[in-house]
Image (cartoon, rainbow, N blue to C red; front, side, top):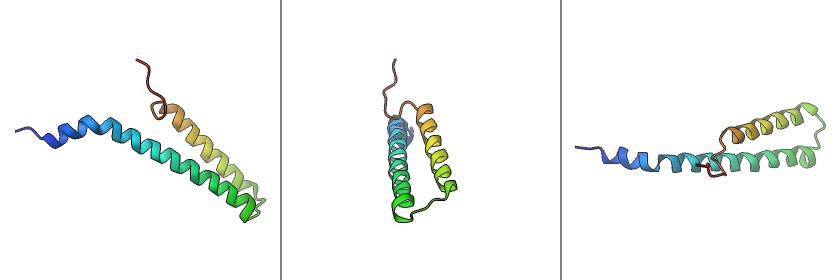
Length: 77
């Protein structure tokens, strides 16, 4: 007897992974820009370490997107 759940999941697994990646990147970007807005306009922070932390975290996300070029672009065959 075949396990139909695993077969069905394997069929949709790439789509689920792609959807999770897109949600993760979108939510990260929204929060990162909110955090920067909050540091500048709400807290009036001049602490440079907070801005460096924001920069390196955002740059890390950029490289994550570059490594996963399937996130928003179709792979060429």
